Length: 216
Image (cartoon, rainbow, N blue to C red; front, side, top):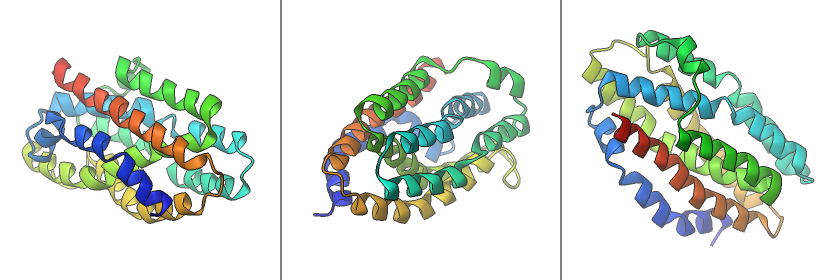
């Protein structure tokens, strides 16, 4: 079993619980009102804007030159994605200043804080657990949800959906890169750190969607 295969096997239960969240099924069916979609975009902004700082922190903390090089690749690819989200909020008629200036929801804040803690104090490899969860779910769900919601809202083109569409496609491309990276890591502690963080992240990321549904 490769390290990546082990990651998939040991996070399968957490992943299944995440995918069972009712709001995800509603999004794939186009059964999400526009205000709730705007609320999702706002929460997405508040964690996506931390992506490059977190990757930079991991790069600063690691002594693994090959891992650091891979993190630099991620940083180059992830820059400016929070701006896509703000553009989508504006296209959907939302208040960009209010969205960017508001505090994140408690679950979103908890997820971001844990990512910093795990990267700083547990292992710089732990951040790959967050990457696995966010990129994996995005690659699987984002484009499908965009198609369903665009049809539901009567939207034309990608206006209001650039983050879901573009990020979903990018994360499909990232999947192979991520798999090869995990399989190349030589640090004995890397695999366990990634798996532990991924299991926590499935719960914390899922809580964002559970909170959104409760707020709706």
